Length: 201
Image (cartoon, rainbow, N blue to C red):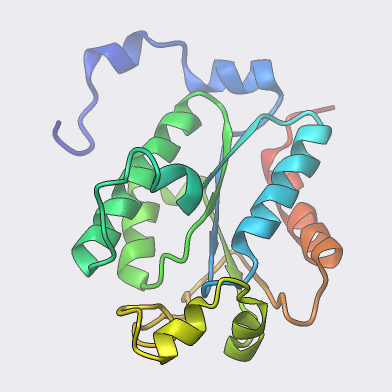
């Protein structure tokens, strides 16, 4: 399919705006980025739980439910990382068309990768949340010992150790998860996104 081309089927579907009105929400993609063990999945799950309790329909995507299924044929080379994010962004775009709020938790370490996702999803639909604890804090939280293995040369291309992480240039929100607890971080996120996603009276 040609990128950006509108196909007849899409015009016959119930339109996104109608679905959003039915659900009482503006669909958006909330994209958590940050070093491994920066708290992305923890906050994504906490956000989903809180939004669901408030009546919003959400879907969390992260490495566990993407790489074990639709992306289980991809590795961690730069080309595979790009393809991983491209597929995730396309899935997120389908959720958008269904009026669903998608909460994504992916390292997505470079500006190129994040720009790819933003370009597919659309800047107006993309809320980038940068989790920015110190590297030491991430290593301290690493119960799987991945940082230790990377420093010992047992894991190649591990972001933050032997592969780069580029700081996002213009994130929608930056959270220092080493100096804030989960509850405080979650409240900061809610304060910023509820006005954007809410259609509730």
